[in-house]
Image 1 (cartoon, rainbow, N blue to C red):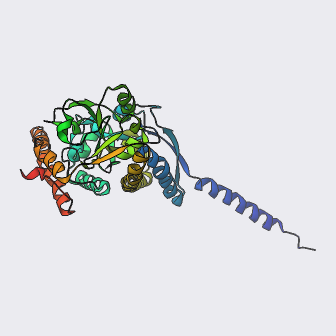
Image 2: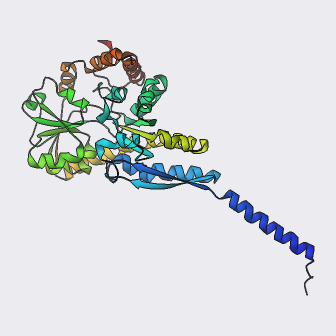
Image 3: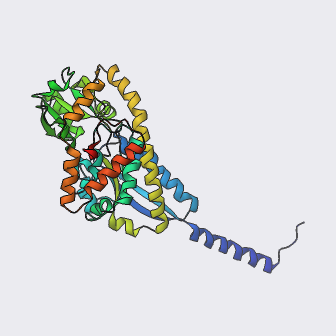
Amino acid sequence: MGRKLSNTTVLTAAALALGLGSSAAIAAPKTISLTAVDGYPPKALQVRTFLSYFIPEVDKRLAKSGEYKINWNKAFAGQIVKVRHVMTGMQKGLGDIGVVTSVFHQDKVPMQAVAYVTPFVTSDPVLLSRTVDELSGKFPAMKEAWARYSQVLLTSFSVIDTYQMFFRKKITKLEEFKGLKIAGAGINMRYLTGTGATPVIGSMVHYYNKFKTGAIDGSMLWTDAAVAFKLVEGAKFMLKADIGTANSKALTMNAASYKRLPKAVQDVIHEVSAAYRDHTAAQSLADADKAYQNFQKKGGTIIQMSQAARENWAKTMPNIAKDWAAQLDAKGLPGTGLLKGYMDSMRAAKQPIIRHWDKE
């Protein structure tokens, strides 16, 4: 028969139990609610990797300390903000964290366009994304531009392996662009200067219908996006010009939402933002290899533009980079310095540069 427990032992055990319960309550993580937004649907690469990589990685790193956890409200595909209105929505606090398609907002964050004004320089989205982030550290005006619209820039990144040209009919050379209506995001439409084509500013979510109705004859897009949005059904011909990649996306937080976060959570958000940048850019390359095959499997035809033709296209464009830099300089922004810094980084990385935009 076991020993009878003394009153002291019972009281001690009860006290311990109460203490453990109290410790467990203190150790319970504090829940923070964040709304994540983008106008694009989950099939768009930046949304897909936000869901599959960014959120799980933040959750995993926060779980290590056990102090905080995030309750994610995932609002994509225009649930809260449309494609071209993410930046405005973030400014108004409609989202706490979101992916802004920065190429649509050159009037507000013009320094983000450095890769867009330097085509035929690099097709390495990982290198590009890291370089632009490094430049935002060297040129504070890049982050200050976002701050004016109540946003904290977490990272700038690319979802593009390289821009190509997609057409309803077979196009094999630049001279055949004449008279065609060609769609693009905006600033890259300056690549068409002197070709005789009519630029049509738009978003890829609308290209499918525009091709089907004949509202456009061509578009400048990357292959993974063309396949994801089924453009091959209306644009069966790709002119593979390898124009280059560009940082079309920026991950930002609403400034007030960011300030409310504990320092430990802010640190994790920054760490994972850099990892998400690299992961997404690397994924764009992996997806591109499959996309070229899928484009052909779905009935598309790829026409390779010759190196001589690519060089001719690059060299006959106006120097859009120097024009852009001069306009920024006139506004008191370091346009010329940013352009040189970008091109120096690309030269140091031994990229296959066709035109040294800053040296003319």
